[in-house]
Length: 201
Image (cartoon, rainbow, N blue to C red; front, side, top):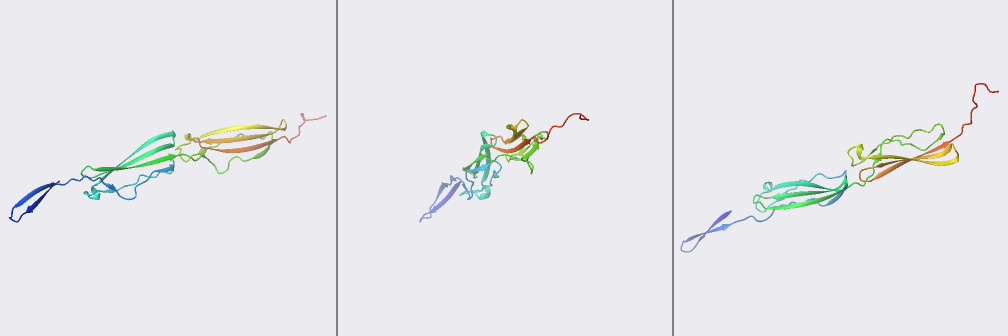
């Protein structure tokens, strides 16, 4: 922008000087800009709405552009978000603010259901089938993100039909967090043999 300045001398002579005024100052973001943070994968904050001011531009004439990129980590729910706000005034001067959000999945899945298989004692001919368990994860969008494995260990007892079964369910998410549930089944043989035949001698 050009600014004309007239100088009047004692002899009534006037002299016009042309001064060039330039806006070379970058906008400045207002208080409250977001800082770098580390959060759990289910607690990512929404992008904040930032404002900025410029020495030569009214606040509502400073444009704010926002962009976000994701940098994948070592598993689907560990990654980095890079958020960038760029403030630009009418003269093309601009400044940027970058926020880095480190996203982590440190929470194990939780088994579904209010009651899980409990420890029991049964007769050797009444051993129940293993229950099918499911689990929910705080960051996996579907059950496909949780893997359920079942392991059974047999511990010998004092005779062939008296033993212990230890069933272990392990629920794992895509980032390797896991939780387990253990059921111990004590198997006993308390029933005496029965003679065959309808009529005994």
